[in-house]
Length: 436
Ligand code: URA
Image (cartoon, rainbow, N blue to C red):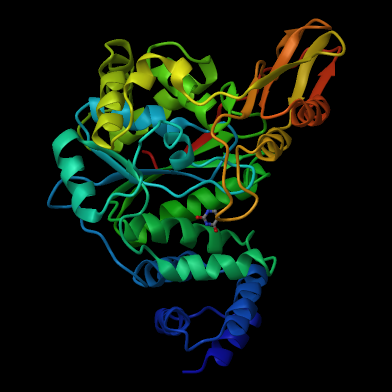
């Protein structure tokens, strides 16, 4: 078999066999197939596509390129979640404790955030002392003992995906739906997940701007699950405007804790409950969705989800006193309000612009390895559909300096669209794929 023949076959629209896909990814992992051939192949895949069988084979080849975890000695069903990335998406911080408090263990490995989307680990690291670097033994022990873990990867999961993503990033081949689907699913499968709830974000602040593309990605990932004998539900959710109010690491932790206390913004609370209910349903311990939803609501109302979060932070070395007194979280020295220039209805809060503004303030990283500032960020005080008066505060910028705050004010002003006519609020979800 030769790499060049596999590239030309895909270039000409052919369907690659299982053996060809494994040969190609194994050769790439070993370093026998050079980057330039893999880059050419990625472009052929972007232009010609891959069917579900090919994409499943690619997923398994990527998953098998490194360590593969088996959590069956500590949990009956290894349950995981994944979001394709959004602005203000602190869902894991609320969903994992809810699900765990309902008696279903959640051990989740995440990565740091990149670009305009935040990462779960960056948020958790705003809590002083919180350790994200567990090893596999520690991960499993904690999962068995308290039923909740939020950590970085404990093993080398799908290293070929990391190498492939780096090439895609510089060759214009990131937006290929089969390449995204296999990239996401390979890491989940290598991490030992049996059942996965996916949050496929759609809109101005998401990878997938278009609902049809989001649906195609969601369907493909659910099909990969079928091929790989994993249960997968994909939710299509809105990412035209930020989720909740807070965008920025410590601000998002604060909002997550307030939500666990029974408060928090309505859209974020509802998003978290829907997500947690789907995870509970997939665990097999609940008869139907309404029963799972009732359990999720109960865990928020009776404080057991909050208790789980405190237990998690304590187990991973974080300072739990911060959770009782949120003013101890890192906070920025400069706070500036953005006010509405005119009266009317909010038609747009451009999620990507908000995410990029937060990144410029220091809340996110432009490239891998950049340091981030946990204290800075933005509070987006309204949702699309809200009526505002000229002079009302519509956002609060938390910045390191007055100059950075003023730059953010200008950018955020342009990100908000206010018009005279009223407009319906945006939907939270656009559909569910993979649930009966
Ligand atoms: N997230 C991933 O993990 N991989 C992609 O290719 C895109 C988003």
